[in-house]
Structure formats: structure tokens, C-alpha cells
Amino acid sequence: MKFFPVLAAIALLSTTLVAQEAGTTSPGTTGGMPAASRVKSPEVAADNRVTFRLWAPKAATVAVYGNFPGGRGLAMTRGDKDIWSVTTAPLAPELWAYTFEVDGVRTVDPNNYNVARDGVGFMNTLLILSDETKVFQPQQVPHGSVNTVWISSTPLKTPQRAFIYTPPGYEGSSAKYPVLYLLHGSGGDEDAWPTMGIANVIMDNLIAQGKAKPMIVVMPDAYWNQAASLDLAGPRTTPPPGVGGGTATAAANPTAPRPVTTYEKNEQQIVGDIIPFVDKYYRTIADRENRALAGLSMGSAITTNVAVKRTDVFASIGILSAGIFTSSNTSVGGTKVFDQINPDFLKDSAATNKKIKLLMFTCGTEDPRLAGLKSTWDELKSRNLDFVAKTYPGEHEWKVWRHSLVDMAQLLFK
Image (tube, rainbow, N blue to C red; front, side):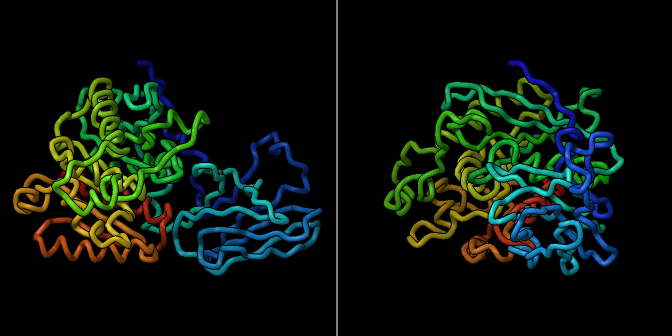
């Protein structure tokens, strides 16, 4: 199996923007744009107000759509030389995303070279700096690498792409490292965590600060039936409803045999294909104590169904913005999720606490999934299970998941 290294700095160059720097075109080429279109956008003032500009001489309406407060349809005004502009209220330090809408058509900002892809969507990014958000900015520290690999998938019957981060100094050493397997959500792909999650930038900075242990991070395509993000051979399918990917009836009876579902396919792919590949071609500490599985949204459902079942493989579990603990069918939600997947997980909490090094939940404060998670956390406390629960300002979005990775990475493999 051949794989080709890709420098992390190159892979992530287009996803981060220093607050004090406006986007520019390539020197000497003007980006192929007419001179009139070259404007300063975005421009960040000292008080963190951001001015967006766009040259659009034939437009009737222009607006900004961003995930910052007040950014969902912020109307821009035509000014001199047909340059449209608008200035926001002061924005909190964060890595924000935005697009323009011109006469009803979404487009990226041509003057900001920081463009990221999330599934089929493209957007610009803007970083407002603070001590807390510096972890999202590439620093002058030793950098790891991001490799692109193709791993044979038994369910798919063809190789499937993944990105693998190796920590600074990996290539020049003989050391072995623990491994975090990190899954994206519905609509995403293997490029989500490297691009939208800027996972390697976060890991570089945390490792340089001594806050995280050097580790390998594997970011595969969580869809067991999709070869790569660019594979258009067939539609992706998300796991069917129900705790274990089965029916509500099966979920109501934890002792009933679990049907073969997409979660079993996920397990086969992760445990049977991806882990053996990584352990063979990378210097890993190949035991459960040094192996973690984490995922966001859909990836959190896969993580729960695979890692909670396979505690012989994973000792650390990260469940980010999970929705599987809430259901209109009360027999499906709460701790019954764990009871169906692995009846022994909560049966003897003391034994599980000794076996599981980290069980971590995160969620956005405005995410509707939070209510179900809080109820589940109360149940877990009543059953004396050790876990970490953190919430972050935001909804079901990347700014929550980036902060989740920052905190989770500092707790892993200690």
C-alpha cells in the first residue's frame, strides 16, 4: 500500500486567517481579477469590528452570511466605485466562517484567500485573535505532518482515503505514539477535521506548549460505503434511526440480538481495516490504553456504538454533540443507549471506571441536543460512572468541535 506525505503547513494554509491581516491576492498575478475588484476584505479594526467589502458593479443586493452574531443576512451597502461594504459589531475572539450572497447567489470573498470546504459548501474563514484562540493560528513552533493514505475497506471492497497526522519529530525518531481516531459528522468527509477542524494546527500548538502528549491522529471517512470525498459513484447513507442502528423494538430490549447494521460495518472498517493498517505502517503503541476513538454528531453515534462495545480496543472515548441520547421514543434515549450497546458498561461502573481512561462528552450551549445529553449525564452520575462533560458557546457547529478537540487532546493518554 503506497501513501504520499503532504506537509501540514500546505494542507492547512487556506483555512486560517490572522485577525490583523486582510486577505490578499497572489503577488504579481493580481489573482486574475481586474484592478477595480481588488479591495481590502475583511478588515479587522482594533476593537474587533470587521468590515467586509466586495466589488459588484452589476449587483442589486449583496449580503454577508456568517456564523458570527448578526451575520445571517447582514445587508451590505453600495458605495464609491461600486464597492459594497458593511461593518459588524465587535466580534468575540473566534475562528469565524462567512460567505457573500449576491442577488441570491452564494459566493466566497474573492479578496480573502482563506477558503475552506465543508462537504459541498465553500466558505471563507476569519480568525479574531486572543490568548484562547491563538491555538487556532499556525505558530512558529515545530510542525507535524499530514499524510494522505488509502486504506483497503472490507465493507466497501476498495481502498478508502484517510488523513493521518504525525507529531513533530516523528520522521526523525524511532519513538512509538498513542493514536486518536477522529470521525467527522453527517455530510462531511475525511477532509473535515484537517480543514474545518484545523486538527493539525491545534495539535502542533498544544504539543509545543506541553499541554498535549505527542500523538498520531487518524481522520478517516466515517462512511463505510464511500471511497473518498470526491467519489460520486453513489449516495452516502447515514446510520438508520435507533440506538444501535436497528429498530426501536430492538433498542427497547437490550438483551435482544443486535442486527447487522451500518454500525457493524463501521466497526468492521475501523477495527478490522483502519487500525491494522495504522499499526502496520506507523509507529504506534498498539494497545487499548493508547488508543482513542472520538467523533462529532454522526461520528459521535459511530464512536458510541463502536467504542462502548469494543472496550477491548479503545480505552478513551470522545462523544461530541451527540444526538443519539435523545429520542421521541423514551426507550431509546439516555443510559439505555449504553445498555443496548454493551450491557456490561454500566452494570459494574467501578470496573468500567478502571478500564476507561477517558469518557468525554461535549456540546454547544445552543444545540438542541444538549437537553438530552444533560439528562443522560445526570443518569450516568446516579450510576457512578466517571466522565467529563463540557459545553461551549455555539450551536451544532465547528467552533464547538474545534474547542472540543483542544480540551480533549489535553486529557488523552495522560
